[in-house]
Length: 126
Image (cartoon, rainbow, N blue to C red; front, side):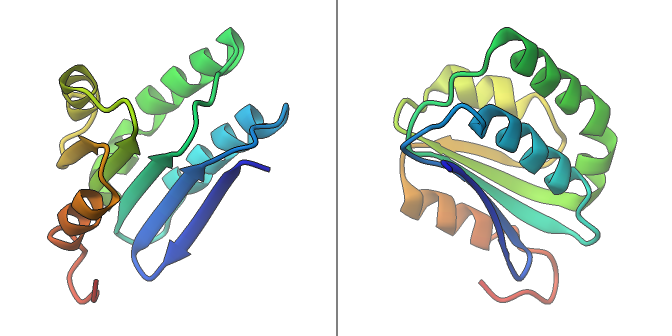
């Protein structure tokens, strides 16, 4: 199982790592739904340590998730850091345009952690 969702205090972490299995695209979409159902404000770290190739049906479901959960995510998420080896300015523009909260796309775990620490919900230690 290559897709993991964990929570530590107000930090949700979605990680995709090797080896990717046939059920991982479905686990990824289920994790997105779980993130959108969070009951309290949070920051989100999404780490792609490997590529997760989504079949067309799951890509469509992911895009619908972005649309369906936009209002809820804007209400609860304080910031998102996306860590990818292939981080680019284009990805930054794309993901930055999805929501009203701050977004960072980077190839650095340390930069992501520092960014999220500045956006933690009130009363939460880094």
